[in-house]
Each structure stands twice: as C-alpha cells, then as structure tokens.
Image (cartoon, rainbow, N blue to C red):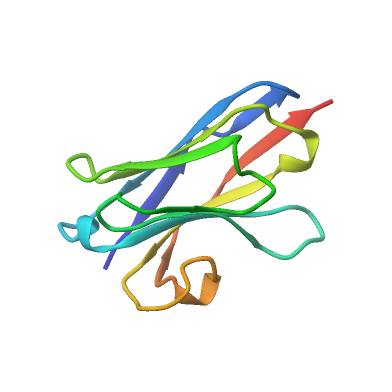
Length: 124
C-alpha cells in the first residue's frame, strides 16, 4: 500500500509560480512511477506529467511542456511539480498518483494509488 499526500496548492496570479509536493508512505516508493494529473470543474481528469521510478525519464502534456517540471527525491519519498508561468487555464485540482503497473503512464488507469488532491487557482 502507498498513501499519497499532496501539498503546495493555492491562489496565484497569472505568470506566477507554485511548487506542488507529494509525500508518499511506504518503503517501496522508489519502485513506482509517479504522475501528476489535474481536473478542472466540469472537465475530465487529464494527464499533466510523469516520472519514471529512477527519475531518468520524464513526460509532459503538451499544454504544460516548457512551463512545468516534475522531479522526485526517492530518499525523501517525495515527488514535486514545479509550475512556472501559470495561466488561468491551469486552474484545477491537482492529483498525485503512483503506478506499479506496466503501461502508458500518461493514462490514469495505469495508476494504482491516488492522493486526495490540492487546489491550484490562477487568477487573471
């Protein structure tokens, strides 16, 4: 079992930055690929970014590429999402997820465990 707790959300003006953190419980964190997804009101949950278990490989949605950076610290059981140049359309609840399965890590069904989410609101 892996429990995930997100933090770092909040209200920011357009063009600003936020850093989300996701703290994981369990001793097997380093064996999981990790991802960030988001869900805006009235919309489907969508992929934002993912990182392999080693941190060597990262993946991004086109909408955030060049603005967001995913990273992980396996010694701290934590994954991060640095979000720069934020736009109002980035407003959503952001979820951290862990995947111990083989599969496309840009797809939510690949993930076994999910956090409760943290709200990010970007004002124009």
